[in-house]
Length: 89
Image (cartoon, rainbow, N blue to C red):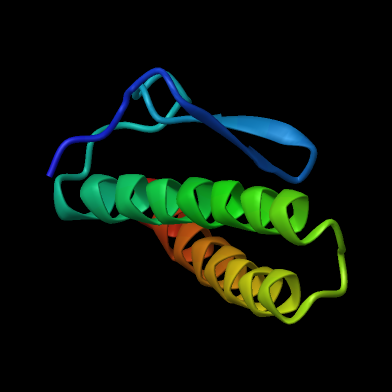
């Protein structure tokens, strides 16, 4: 699976970079999981934005459903990052 290494996503009002220059050392499977989660978040955010534009509503069923999925994925990412950063210490 390949990822666009120049893409960026938001986390806590800052950027999370997928290009390996985020200050973390390489940890094989953990790095791949981190990249996968970031890509899934990016994809869900894009889908939600497109859904909101097409429905012209923030409260449409589609927008709410995608927003809930995005929230779940972001929570999963934060839990992963908590474990991931502990591995680095």
